[in-house]
Image (tube, rainbow, N blue to C red):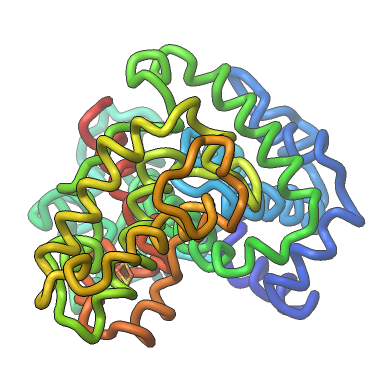
Length: 390
Ligand code: SF4
């Protein structure tokens, strides 16, 4: 398989009955160790991975995406992204044509570029150029500007553009493909996030193993940031719905915005942004209640007080409901041991928020493709880590 997001891959997945059905079938065909071969190599991808049959290549790759859906935007995602981009790039470099990849590039036909322009672009008059260099300079592909611009990070002055097509060398296509691969991987993980609770146990086991490998591989970076779990909150990276809830809302939305949304979002974002399994309890993640009492509850209470009318003035019992949503049962003064008396509510998905409190959802550019406010937050942390170091 040359591109796991290309036309051919989509067709195979459709033949299995769609992505969910495909993921359900994967554990019957490949085991965890085979999947992990894709991310445990050093220096260059192993031959058996590069030469795997199409179905096996696709299954081992999508198995990793299923595991990432349980834990998006962590170091595991970096590991899967980098190792698999390299696997596919190695194959693409040997491929005869790049026309089948997900980028929608087309080969340039003879005479399409005026000879004078081609001579300049490919430096045909430079006699001293070797064969390799001539090949590298050859303008082989074109891409429709509408598809090209969102992926191109350089200046348009550096590209030969004609009749709404950008004309490209092979290496330029591969560099654009790498960016598209990353976007497609993120998009796929977000789609799978919606079905993560229905995925077979296989994916939880795989996720655990991936986390171990990522912890070892990124040991120094993880030590530099302290931990990948419980972390200080970054309100500047909160999604618009959470910022709106924090600023206080009107009476019709108060209970939903404060007790349901804010309580679940702030507690998971602060204590356990990437829960290791379903039904996790707060006492599995922290050793005492100080984080909740000193950092999370004050934010929730202040947001409640900003509501019109203030939430806790006319509904003092709502504090007990907040503890209930944190998993301590309906109580005012719980101890850590009470954690698990009720369910620790996970932040509702975006479609639920839009249905229950449409005024909270004012999406910004980072909301694109996002299914849950917590994933939004993890994505912003991931992008920041990627763009600006730790
Ligand atoms: S799209 Fe989701 S994360 Fe973004 S504002 Fe709406 S509910 Fe919040």
